[in-house]
Image (cartoon, rainbow, N blue to C red):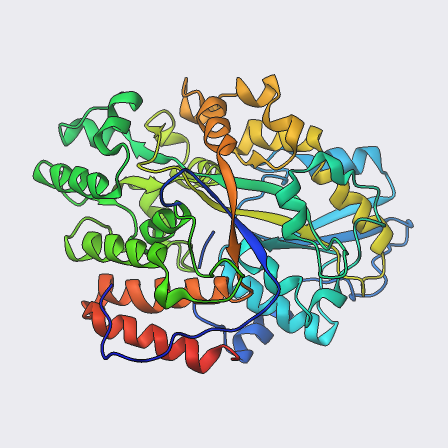
Length: 462
């Protein structure tokens, strides 16, 4: 990591300690800069919410709205069809999901809605990068206490997952959906054309133990790369993957933001910059609104993608049926955990009890297993992780790949690392306003780093 100037103090803000998940013994989701108020307002008007009337139709059915981002695997089209199942079990309930791709814009809009107590869904998904802010003093009071409402069995969840969503006064504002143990997903056809091994064990050996070896594999790929393809999808995605494998990320041990001095951030930045400047990436922004990144899967524009468990569902949906069987999964250079989410219930909703009951059902062990079997999202409930249904699971899209074994083995090593309430925003600045500028515009790394530092100082309250 190169910075301009010396002697500038690091940005620090003291707060309650929370934890992010990491794995491994060495070093360990998604998204754009702070949305402008106008953009947030536009998103507000574009989605249904819990204050659209009383959410009850003429037939007496209650409509519960759930706001999500990315791929949670609940839906009735490509997911585990959990909404339809719940509606059969509860004929008085109708479920409507509003989903967006960009997690940062989702969070910015959600904060605006929370501040207004308006436009909120009955259930709102929360990404781990923002859970410390959601449980912090400004927002904690906006959520129902799911330890007292909805009937969730908190003992079923991983202890550290419950702790992440617990406020300073002991209220639980979110129920764990999944965790994000890491792997590398790769396109076997592109590897074969580039004269690289395609067997997942041999592929893993290419980069075992060192992200530097991953870059070396990228250089080897480039020697025989099929025209129009790149080794990796995104330098920003690589940054997130490398950082996810570090026990020191954006915060110090006390939960104080100290990203400029973080060895994990330094390693992730340097690795991502090397990939960008070395021409190893397709120069794509993950989860972009134009769908260019999504199209990259379908058109086989890149050979690898950093692949937390929830990414398998995205590959299935975006690469499409024509590419079924072409993608496989190998162990990562260093084990890590990228992402994982929660379901929360705004307490200003008109149907808090019913929403909390739905959230508890969607995140119960039985439903976790169903989602994993279809979408690959690794459960955050203890017994489900070790169940035969997960251990022996294979995803049809990935053929005979032992998906359950790969990800459950990675999940077994997860241990908590400190996070601050600002991690999600700093991540966005580093990736979308730092690394992406280097990758797409050729900005010098020192200048890009300084731009990130100015954004942190300007946009985050100190």
